[in-house]
Every structure is written in C-alpha cells, then in structure tokens.
Length: 229
Image 1: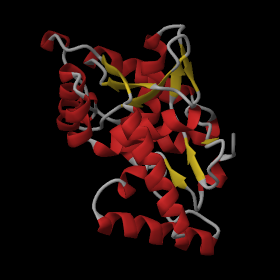
Image 2: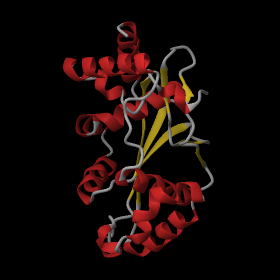
Image 3: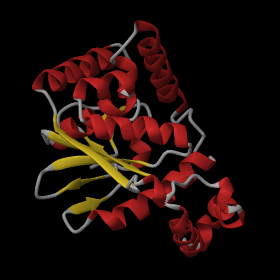
Image 4: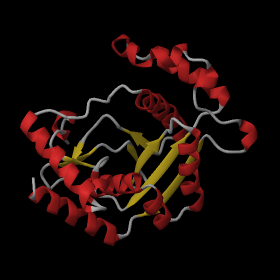
C-alpha cells in the first residue's frame, strides 16, 4: 500500500484508459506524468468540484446499502506489487467473492442512464465500448489487487433519500464543512435524484469476470508507457 501523495507521477487506475486507446491521448498522459515528476506535485487541482463532493457523499450512502460482504476503503491507494509507479484507489471489494468494486454516483441524470444501461445489458464489450474509462479503471484495480472479478455499482438517490444525504453532509467533520455547504443550502430540485415511481433501483450493479486477455493487454500497455517516462 502507498500513500495517496505517491499517486503523483504514477500511472493510476482512474487515468489508465488514456494509454489503452488512440496515440494522442496516450502521449498527452505520458507528458503530464513527466510534468508531475518535474514539479513533484499533481497538476490536477480539481478536488472539490460539485460532482466530486456529491460523489463522495453518495458513495457513503451506497456503501451503507451494500451489506456486510462489502469492504469500503476508497481513501486508500494501493501500489502494484511488482510494477513501480503504478497504483490505484479502488472503492472497495466484495470480500467473499474477491471482486473489486467501483461505485459511480453520477451528477447528471443523463450520465446515470448511460451507466444504468451498462448494468442492465451486462455485456463486457458494450461496457468497454461505451465507458472505457470506467471499464479499464476496474480492470486496473483488479490487476493491482490480484482479483479476477470486478463489479460496477451505480447509485442515484430517490428524492426521499436526499434528506439523509444532507444530514450526512452536516455530519462531516468541521474541517471539511466548506466542501459540502452547497449541498446543505441547495433546493432539492437542484440535486440529482430519481423517482420511486420510475421502478428504477437506487443501487444498480454489473459483476463480471475479467478476460485474461484484457489483463495481459493492460499490463503490456502500462509497462510500455512507463518505459517512455
């Protein structure tokens, strides 16, 4: 395990999709990592945007609904056991199934519907095509932990749950209060939610076994990219 600060100048699971596709995004990502190594700090300063803080709150709400089989540790960063400068921060795991999880809490209803369709189709190739950034993030975290299974979990609260989210925002330690002030002061219709009448669950998931060919491809691409940094 490594501290989050050591994500700096490393290939990370959340960004690894950028080396899995076209040459230009791949080279841009490699260039950014080189910049971080020179600056000794992350070049990404977007840590308290509304989508990020909303996701932080809703992840906690989702985890409360998952049950005792799940372990949550999204604030931890784990290093690959044998590849230096390669790390990931999985949201947690299904312990009995040895399945790495990633909880997505979209800030827009459109984004939620797109992820909901992936959960409903339960098709790996469709997932890979429509949301490669999330697919390869899960594959990467599974590779780092050493698991063969992954689970995409998608959460969107009902209107009736918004009060609980506001209460959660109010309970966060004083040091973080500024991050969640906008949630506590928002009109409910300004927040994303779904209606119970839609017959859509707040919590939706897609669990799957990762093809060995995708593990092999990812590991090869990571090593190639690191060799150029």
